[in-house]
Length: 230
Image (cartoon, rainbow, N blue to C red; front, side):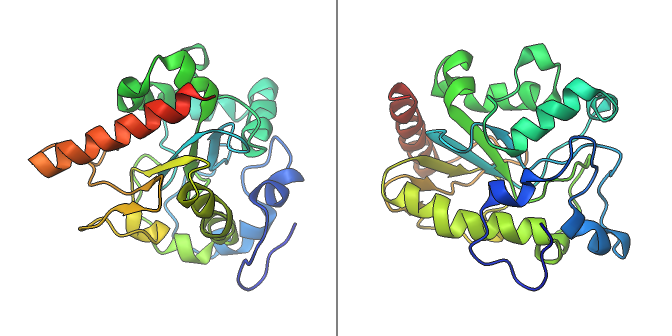
């Protein structure tokens, strides 16, 4: 599916549905990537989704996937290519230790207070604004330029966030809140189950002050409660 102009009410899963497993970019992004200093490593396979985003009770928001040697190895592996198609469809559980992925090593410490990993893995999804890997994200301008990023942000604003505000899911923004359109300076709770706490660069919720610790306790309780219903 090719995108021109602004993305409005485009289903994120439909947008990626026809992209082949061995593709290194979405066709709609190709021209923008070709003419930009984007900082992404396009040798890797793209996906801004990890986990069962279609029905996960808990969704964690970040800015883009990290990168390590496994991401490069998977790019030429047919089994991994199929896995990425399932990830983009939002139907595959979070990658775990068996995948040898950096995502698991980085995500497990962040979610350890939400419950056992088996529970987290089954009913949690990660959504990044950008689908492309990089060791360090230094390209905020690309979040507005890439059609795939605009589709993601539009879907979050029109589908995901209203679901959280209605209490149907818990959504926690753990990176780049301002790019998601969420403030994280003072009032950081939106509706019943949409949170944008102060965080460290690695996504851990900040616990420097009493108010931050109280906020973290509220978020952990909400995450544990919603995962218990999955």
